[in-house]
Length: 147
Image (tube, rainbow, N blue to C red; front, side, top):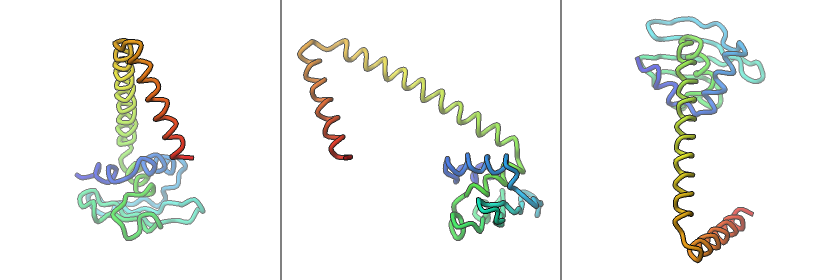
């Protein structure tokens, strides 16, 4: 089953919004249409229903007729909501993956900060003054580029 491909093709925003849509009860008329194939109507922001077709065996056959996904290979929030409705265990897997990524980011940040401290502590006073001045100039130049 290539179920996870549908979720991998979705942006982070679509994953979270799809979960919101499911929790808001926007997935309507969910019906199986064969092994690993599901159709549903998913209410959009204006409560207009969009047609969603999810084929977990042939991911490229999946579609939604919303403006974001119609005629493209994108997985939209409505497709994600439908997948989560059919496979609720994927919600826990998704949340666990997000938690693991956040933990890894924090570990890397701690290691990076420790390396910065080590580097700064290894500098002599004149090297430290030059590095600080260079950093302040670079920060000022970045500020000028964006404003």
